[in-house]
Image (cartoon, rainbow over all chains, first blue to last red; front, side, top):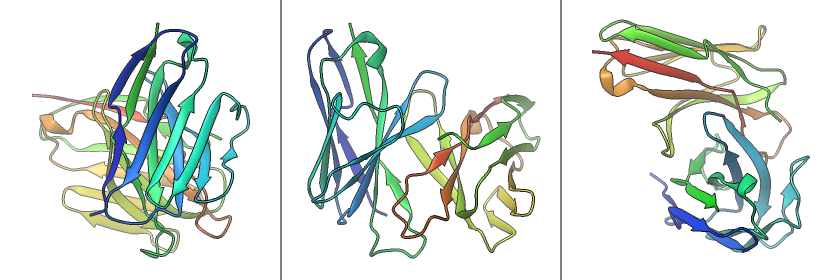
Length: 118
Length: 114
């Protein structure tokens, strides 16, 4: 099946620094990628939708200037958490969708990136 | 937005028993999916049921969908210790184009006691 990877798996950074998380579709072209955030013991919340070659669409309440998304190619989307603070510590999960693939528009999820801001 | 509600929030049963989890949602959907997540790990896709389907089976899993009630259930039969995990339903809304992210329920934490 389709594989999505994320890098890094986990990262610890100091408050005020920026962190970049990569999401790659390994064996298909992802016209659309999604970024989710999951706080401990909670569910996944959609943060933004990333379309290749265009600006990302952010969900209500998600700061676009803080969470920079770049979908520069059909296999790579990046999420940069700028000026990270401890409250940004979370599990960030991406998913990729091949709109020209299966008719059910199945999403393929990456393994997640655990961000801890100290 | 978080539209899925699952119940129970937590469920503890003995190994070998069946586990049933329910999910409700609010908007029209293309499909509903169930995922499993082990503690601190990524999601595992379990099963997808389309809006025009009422029941689907996959191994020990049985999913039902009632679009009139906007609800779904996941049944795991003959549970095993390895089934211990959090289970989430996720809906793919019917807004057209397949370009929307999934909306996840709050999840049910299932514990299988040996």
